Image (tube, rainbow, N blue to C red; front, side, top):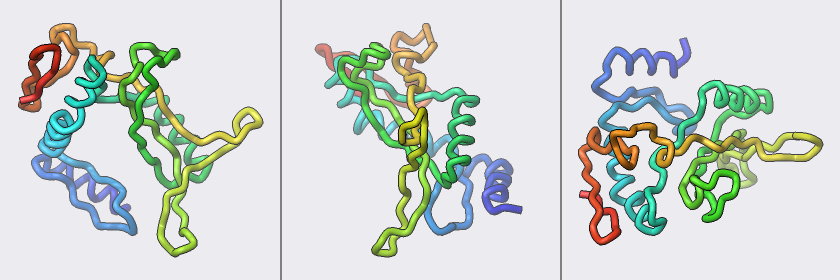
Length: 180
Protein backbone atom coordinates (compact mmCIF):
# COMPACT_ATOMS: atom_id res chain seq x y z
CA UNK A 1 0.00 0.00 0.00
CA UNK A 2 1.28 3.50 -0.85
CA UNK A 3 2.60 5.64 2.06
CA UNK A 4 0.11 8.46 1.51
CA UNK A 5 -2.79 6.01 1.76
CA UNK A 6 -1.43 4.68 5.05
CA UNK A 7 -1.18 8.26 6.30
CA UNK A 8 -4.79 8.94 5.31
CA UNK A 9 -6.01 5.87 7.19
CA UNK A 10 -4.01 6.98 10.25
CA UNK A 11 -5.59 10.43 10.11
CA UNK A 12 -9.10 9.05 9.72
CA UNK A 13 -8.57 6.66 12.65
CA UNK A 14 -7.29 9.44 14.95
CA UNK A 15 -9.16 12.64 14.12
CA UNK A 16 -7.80 14.64 17.07
CA UNK A 17 -4.21 14.83 15.82
CA UNK A 18 -2.67 15.72 12.50
CA UNK A 19 -1.60 12.86 10.29
CA UNK A 20 2.07 11.98 10.20
CA UNK A 21 3.55 10.56 7.06
CA UNK A 22 6.93 9.25 6.16
CA UNK A 23 9.02 12.07 4.77
CA UNK A 24 9.77 11.69 1.10
CA UNK A 25 12.33 13.69 -0.91
CA UNK A 26 10.49 16.99 -0.31
CA UNK A 27 7.80 18.27 1.99
CA UNK A 28 4.70 18.08 -0.15
CA UNK A 29 1.72 18.34 2.16
CA UNK A 30 -0.29 16.28 4.55
CA UNK A 31 -3.70 16.19 6.14
CA UNK A 32 -4.08 18.41 9.22
CA UNK A 33 -6.71 18.74 11.92
CA UNK A 34 -9.27 21.50 12.60
CA UNK A 35 -7.17 23.13 15.33
CA UNK A 36 -4.30 23.56 12.86
CA UNK A 37 -6.62 25.10 10.26
CA UNK A 38 -8.24 27.43 12.82
CA UNK A 39 -4.81 28.62 14.02
CA UNK A 40 -3.64 29.34 10.48
CA UNK A 41 -6.80 31.27 9.63
CA UNK A 42 -6.73 33.20 12.93
CA UNK A 43 -3.07 34.16 12.39
CA UNK A 44 -3.75 35.15 8.80
CA UNK A 45 -6.67 37.38 9.74
CA UNK A 46 -4.72 39.07 12.48
CA UNK A 47 -1.43 39.49 10.61
CA UNK A 48 -2.47 40.01 6.99
CA UNK A 49 -6.21 40.15 6.30
CA UNK A 50 -7.03 43.07 8.57
CA UNK A 51 -4.32 45.21 6.93
CA UNK A 52 -5.49 44.23 3.43
CA UNK A 53 -9.10 44.99 4.36
CA UNK A 54 -8.23 48.40 5.80
CA UNK A 55 -6.17 49.27 2.72
CA UNK A 56 -8.93 48.14 0.31
CA UNK A 57 -11.77 49.81 2.19
CA UNK A 58 -13.77 46.57 1.91
CA UNK A 59 -13.37 43.06 3.26
CA UNK A 60 -10.61 41.25 1.39
CA UNK A 61 -11.20 37.64 0.40
CA UNK A 62 -10.57 35.01 3.05
CA UNK A 63 -11.05 31.94 0.92
CA UNK A 64 -11.14 30.75 -2.66
CA UNK A 65 -13.46 27.87 -3.59
CA UNK A 66 -13.06 25.76 -6.72
CA UNK A 67 -15.69 23.44 -8.21
CA UNK A 68 -14.41 19.90 -7.71
CA UNK A 69 -15.23 18.78 -11.28
CA UNK A 70 -13.37 21.75 -12.79
CA UNK A 71 -10.45 21.27 -10.42
CA UNK A 72 -10.33 17.59 -11.34
CA UNK A 73 -10.23 18.53 -15.05
CA UNK A 74 -7.29 20.87 -14.36
CA UNK A 75 -5.46 18.15 -12.42
CA UNK A 76 -6.13 15.62 -15.19
CA UNK A 77 -4.72 18.01 -17.80
CA UNK A 78 -1.71 18.57 -15.53
CA UNK A 79 -1.15 14.79 -15.37
CA UNK A 80 -1.45 14.53 -19.15
CA UNK A 81 1.27 17.19 -19.41
CA UNK A 82 3.45 15.12 -17.02
CA UNK A 83 3.09 17.40 -13.99
CA UNK A 84 4.09 15.94 -10.65
CA UNK A 85 2.88 18.81 -8.49
CA UNK A 86 0.94 22.06 -8.28
CA UNK A 87 2.18 25.42 -6.98
CA UNK A 88 -0.42 27.64 -5.39
CA UNK A 89 0.52 31.27 -5.87
CA UNK A 90 -1.10 34.05 -3.87
CA UNK A 91 -2.20 36.95 -6.03
CA UNK A 92 -4.44 39.99 -6.17
CA UNK A 93 -6.78 41.15 -8.90
CA UNK A 94 -6.18 44.66 -10.31
CA UNK A 95 -8.14 47.49 -8.67
CA UNK A 96 -10.37 47.88 -11.74
CA UNK A 97 -10.75 44.25 -12.72
CA UNK A 98 -13.24 44.32 -15.59
CA UNK A 99 -13.91 40.58 -15.88
CA UNK A 100 -15.41 40.36 -12.37
CA UNK A 101 -15.78 43.79 -10.74
CA UNK A 102 -16.62 42.31 -7.31
CA UNK A 103 -13.11 40.75 -7.31
CA UNK A 104 -11.36 44.10 -7.94
CA UNK A 105 -8.43 44.51 -5.56
CA UNK A 106 -9.16 41.28 -3.68
CA UNK A 107 -6.64 38.53 -3.19
CA UNK A 108 -6.90 35.20 -4.91
CA UNK A 109 -4.92 32.05 -5.58
CA UNK A 110 -3.75 30.68 -8.89
CA UNK A 111 -2.75 27.04 -9.31
CA UNK A 112 0.16 26.26 -11.64
CA UNK A 113 1.09 22.74 -12.74
CA UNK A 114 4.75 21.93 -12.10
CA UNK A 115 7.39 19.31 -12.81
CA UNK A 116 10.26 18.62 -10.46
CA UNK A 117 13.69 19.06 -12.07
CA UNK A 118 17.30 19.21 -10.97
CA UNK A 119 18.84 22.64 -11.47
CA UNK A 120 22.39 23.18 -12.75
CA UNK A 121 23.65 23.45 -9.17
CA UNK A 122 22.05 20.12 -8.25
CA UNK A 123 19.11 21.51 -6.26
CA UNK A 124 15.58 20.28 -6.82
CA UNK A 125 13.22 22.91 -8.28
CA UNK A 126 9.57 22.79 -9.29
CA UNK A 127 9.34 24.29 -12.78
CA UNK A 128 6.08 25.71 -14.12
CA UNK A 129 4.65 23.66 -16.99
CA UNK A 130 3.81 25.24 -20.33
CA UNK A 131 1.67 23.55 -22.99
CA UNK A 132 0.25 24.22 -26.44
CA UNK A 133 -3.21 25.79 -26.47
CA UNK A 134 -4.82 27.14 -29.63
CA UNK A 135 -1.42 27.15 -31.36
CA UNK A 136 0.24 29.19 -28.58
CA UNK A 137 2.45 28.23 -25.68
CA UNK A 138 0.59 28.90 -22.40
CA UNK A 139 1.33 28.30 -18.76
CA UNK A 140 -0.80 25.47 -17.35
CA UNK A 141 -2.63 27.45 -14.68
CA UNK A 142 -6.06 27.58 -13.04
CA UNK A 143 -7.82 30.61 -11.47
CA UNK A 144 -11.22 32.27 -11.00
CA UNK A 145 -12.30 30.61 -7.80
CA UNK A 146 -15.42 31.78 -6.04
CA UNK A 147 -14.00 34.26 -3.51
CA UNK A 148 -15.39 34.82 -0.02
CA UNK A 149 -16.04 37.66 0.38
CA UNK A 150 -17.91 38.61 -1.74
CA UNK A 151 -19.47 35.17 -2.39
CA UNK A 152 -19.91 33.82 1.13
CA UNK A 153 -23.56 32.81 0.91
CA UNK A 154 -24.51 33.52 4.53
CA UNK A 155 -27.21 36.18 4.69
CA UNK A 156 -27.29 36.07 8.54
CA UNK A 157 -23.74 37.39 8.69
CA UNK A 158 -23.55 40.82 7.02
CA UNK A 159 -20.03 40.26 5.75
CA UNK A 160 -20.69 36.63 4.97
CA UNK A 161 -17.82 35.73 7.28
CA UNK A 162 -18.06 32.86 9.72
CA UNK A 163 -15.84 34.41 12.37
CA UNK A 164 -17.42 32.89 15.47
CA UNK A 165 -16.06 29.41 14.82
CA UNK A 166 -12.46 30.56 15.07
CA UNK A 167 -12.73 32.69 18.17
CA UNK A 168 -12.23 36.10 16.59
CA UNK A 169 -14.26 39.29 16.74
CA UNK A 170 -14.20 42.06 14.17
CA UNK A 171 -15.67 45.47 14.84
CA UNK A 172 -15.76 48.73 12.93
CA UNK A 173 -14.21 51.76 14.55
CA UNK A 174 -13.96 55.07 12.68
CA UNK A 175 -14.33 53.32 9.29
CA UNK A 176 -11.56 50.83 10.15
CA UNK A 177 -11.99 47.14 10.85
CA UNK A 178 -10.26 45.87 13.98
CA UNK A 179 -9.54 42.27 14.92
CA UNK A 180 -9.49 41.27 18.60
